[in-house]
Length: 407
Image 1 (cartoon, rainbow, N blue to C red):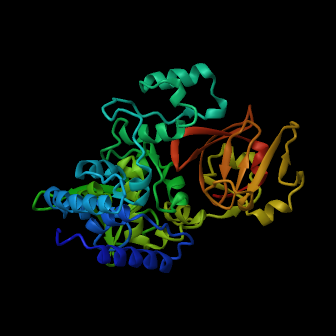
Image 2 (spheres, helix red, strand yellow; image 1 turned 90 degrees about the horizontal axis):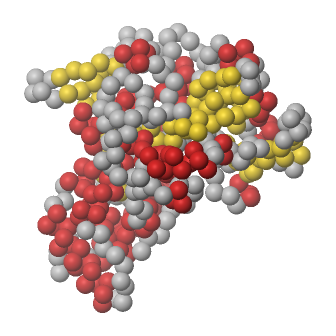
Image 3 (cartoon, rainbow, N blue to C red; image 1 turned 90 degrees about the vertical axis):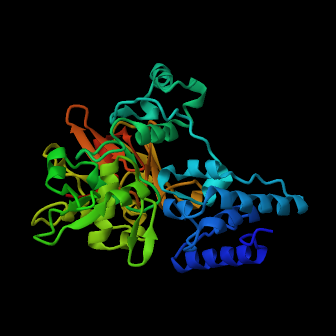
């Protein structure tokens, strides 16, 4: 047997990973099958349950192939016909910067051809507001049949965000992006509204004597502090080393967004990687001599004067004190009804709750949204979701009584 293939070592590795994740406060830690644990064990040297790009490159294709052959032989002897991924198959999972048990168990394939030359498109319609003709037209643009579209439209658009024009370069422009594993929605919601001119004042491109490219980043509230440095190598590996650990899970799609996420952790610390940050914190940090304030009442004046940058659903306890809400049902002035769900309903959600608007649009609790614009004639607010920011989410103004903002 290959000296690297050792069942006891694999089992010990898996237990260490689970214990590390529990220590970090995870409520649920998956128990993987042997094949999944074995593949992770082969690459994952820091025992965080993920294979980073750096870790992947440290194991040669030849050595992994030998390890995989031993794993297959062992599985066969145990009557286990689990698929053992090849080196090239594993490499395909690294598009978001790392491989974890989800990649190895779900094995989902991309729907879009990565060679599609698609322009950046930020104002795509929300699915509940799309006609069948509009949906068909979008699917045809991707070379897909409409039957693959309705249920998978969000995933398709995420893929588009990753491959559309200029997503792979730093160009001082916030394009389309997808929040990844980091719980930094409030940061991403603020980044989504940064203008090209603002970005030019935040970071500059540099080159050292060896020709290595890096970026110096100063946040508007830094007040003369030495700029933080993010290297081209870090951007390409989609990871940074911070206080002795490798941090993964940065957003995918627009490279400028990932640059700002990395710089944010280097400047303000890694708490955001586990607990996130409050809605007002990034707004304060992306301003000069300004402290963002919370508001429970959102006026039209705030919206028309471009004061509102991001918002979030109210805490469930505050929602219970509002009028026109009974048994989770929200009645609007139009007579239409929305529905508030919480965790006990067993629905797969992002936070502790969610709001379903009359047209079927879902707004997630404990999750920040970027405010893009407000139409005073139709009394509609346009939001974007950091989880996939190319889609316009239309919310009636009167629904804003269910939200709080920081401005």
